Length: 295
Image 1: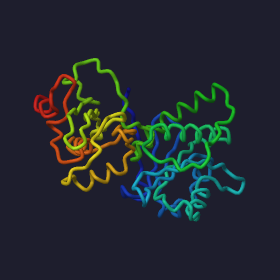
Image 2: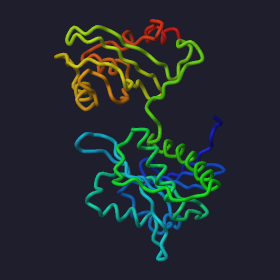
Image 3: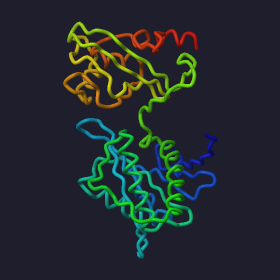
């Protein structure tokens, strides 16, 4: 993939304020707007246009990332995206969100068909990636579009994926996608697949877990068999992660889970303290420590 040139404009002069984002050779315009800064956006012409928006927040109960994806059509009285965001701010059922990311165009080219298609596709992609809990109550309809328009909008989506990730939300990126390496695992450093296998003394289970090293950390993979009984010395954070995780009665993990360190990933698997550098190994038996030492 070729490099991309992204222009980020800090509208308030601070990294925590409003941002405007554009890409070379792209008609799209994106805004990242903290909930507290919505009123500062009044009078911006492109925010009175049609567009698609994302409301990001966190669940107070579970700490899970939440997103609501919606569309806003331009109205004759000048109301559009910003007006819709202000409606959401006043809605007590949407008090969870702390910032919005908005997509519109520099040439005001989005009509009802375009924003319906984009809302539908963004919801489907976010649901498939399973990074965020998608709060949309109903599946938005995609509408009827020509194949030419579909191709155009899919290109817009490809750019939007890059932009929204740059703005701090990896909503469309799956935690892990297994690929068959074309080189030995000790040479391929990106997306390194590791294994942890041991017989549990606590439950008698044969623990067999797979972990994928990515640029974000270590992802324990869906389908891994993990220990079902916690050790007395298990770290509190790991204990909570194990409680919240989707694990069936046989100890089979039902989802991918990201950890920042190999030891936390290994501790999640065995339910207690462990050195992840020596427990995680490649298929041919090399430990993660050996790989990093040789690297």
